[in-house]
Length: 188
Image 1 (cartoon, rainbow, N blue to C red):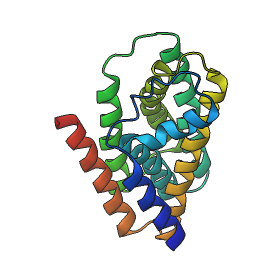
Image 2: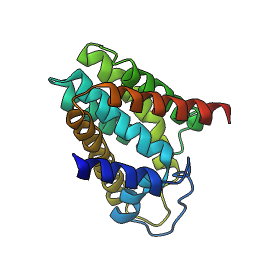
Image 3: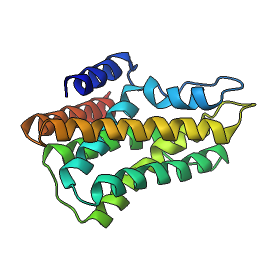
Image 4: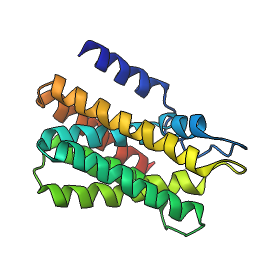
């Protein structure tokens, strides 16, 4: 548990606020894709919040909710890569923090399918940002695999945190913090 908290604190402190959308590197591959979601506090908080909420839901949601996020994030990335316009991506990402934080903060109970659809819809915004900013002259497949693996690990970190804290008050307070961060990004 202490290692999980230490890792979570390190990731949050190392991430730059809402700056995962400035990559623009040439020739990036798996490593650049892996680092991309870790480079912005908005992405880190959203990915960990998905894991927190999945753990609160428990059962099949423990893996289906994060799987839905990763899958639809990939679809959003392909849309972004192809140049398909998605309006208000940054607002969608900030809004995802607010929504996910509220879900965790209130320990919201939804059917698994509804939870999958909800986080999947939010994931499209995160994925679109990754795809639209995919480095030129790169292997998009390796880049996408990198950000998918990093995302899944952040989901796992959220699950581990929630289970280590017995899905209690600290998890709900963490959700409130994520929602507050989303609100700050939406306002600011």
